[in-house]
Length: 157
Figure 1 (cartoon, helix red, strand yellow):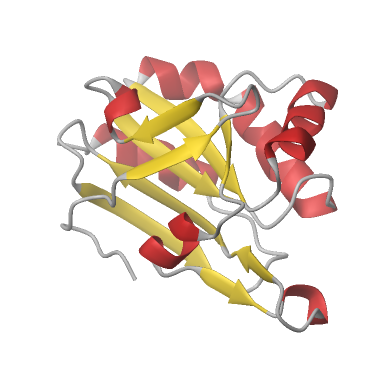
Figure 2 (cartoon, rainbow, N blue to C red):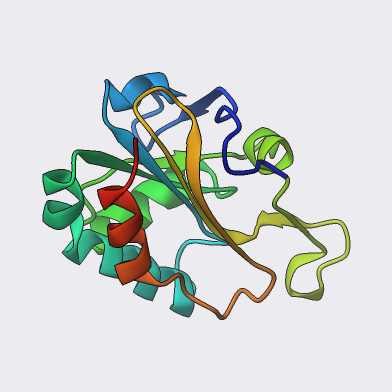
């Protein structure tokens, strides 16, 4: 699993318009908040992404860019993004490369043998790409502490 103090793994994932986004490069000198979620159109994931949507101005004011990542395809992510008026990028990890690199594979998700989703997780990397905050849940029903994420951004260097 990626730990605090390590370099964030380099990622190249499709966004909802099928464009390739490279992280942490895409953050362009800002802190990168990477929020992994198990699946679009599920209750807790919807609540989490809408909470991030509603706090995006605060995150931006803290010199951070937010990227959400799920294993859903870019088409499902696009429908999810449009339905909930989400303004930040949602990236598709349909090949499960990012969940493997970060060490947050949720194997046999929802009792589906062989199905791998992302654990609900948040990583913050500073402008140099070094991970400064990590939160990972083994329980997909648990949301991150949003205030803690904002506080962590105050101390990202």
